[in-house]
Image (cartoon, rainbow, N blue to C red; front, side):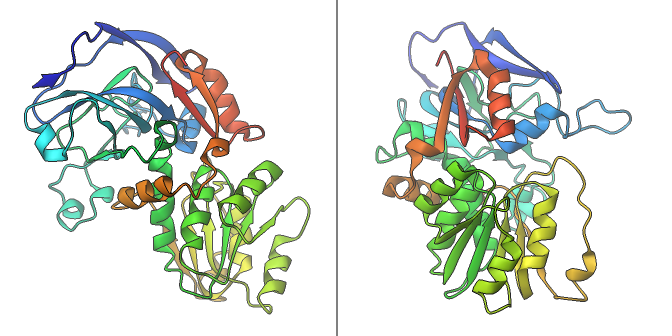
Length: 365
C-alpha cells in the first residue's frame, strides 16, 4: 500500500439523506484496501440526474416493498476529478497510476460477472454500483473518496487542465449518445438541449462531418455556447417553430438524426415530428416524469430507429482527447464552482439553468 503522508482524520462532505435533504457534514476520511484507490477530490460536477434525485424523481430505499435506486445516507457525486493520494496493493500497476497523478473513475463499477459484463456491455451491468447513489459506493462530494477494486479508472494527462477535467464524464456520455446515432457524412443532425450533455453532443456530432448540426434551446447564452461548440445553426423554440424550420432546411423531409438532451417531455414530441421517415432518434435526457406521445409516429407513420443511450462506455479516452484539444469553450461551460456548504444553492442553479451551464462543487471552494 502506498499513501501520501499527513492525511487528516476527518473531512467535509455532502450527505444525501432524502429528497430535498442534503446536508453539509463531517465524516472520517475513508480507508482503502487492496486494488483500491484513494482520491483527494478537486471538484465534483452537478449532473441532471443529481438534480432529479434531489427533487425526489428517483426512488429511494426503503420504498415500500421495493428498493429504490438511491440508498441514503450516501455521499453524492459521480462526475469528478482529483489527485491520487493512496494506492492499495496492486492498484498502481493495474491502472497505471502513481501517487500525485490526476485521475478520475467511470461512474459505474461493474460486477464483471453478469451477462452484460461478459459480453462487453459493462455499462449495462446487472449488478452495478454507481458512485453517489448507494451506501457502499460513496461519491465525490467529499474531500476524499475511494475507487473500489472493480472500478474503471483513468489518468488525466497534463494537457487537460484539472478544472476542465471534471467535464470528462459528461462528455464521454455525450460521445456515446452520438455514436449510438450512427451519423454519416451529409446528415442533418438536431441536438435538443444545450446543457453540458448537449454541448458535448454538438462537438461529437460535428466531428462526424454531417451536412449541418442544428442546436435548440430556450436560453440564448446556451445557444451562444452551442455555436462556439460547433453548431452550424441555433434555434430558440420560444422564437420560431423549430419543426417547420428544420423541415424547410431539408426540403420537407426533416432531420436525419435527433439527439434528445433536455429531459423535457415536449422535446420528445417535437423530435418525433421533426425527424424524417426512417430517421434515428436517440434519447439521453433525464426525465423527471413519464412522457406521453403519439407512438404511431414511430411505427406506422415513419418507421423510426428509436434508441436509448446510457453512460459513457469506452468513450473516456476520446473525451480526454477532445478536452486536450481545447476545441470546447470550457471556461464558459463551467459557470460555477461552489463550496460543498452551498449544496442547496447549487441545486437551485442546476435546476433553473437560467444563469448556469455546468455547476461544480469543491471542498472549501
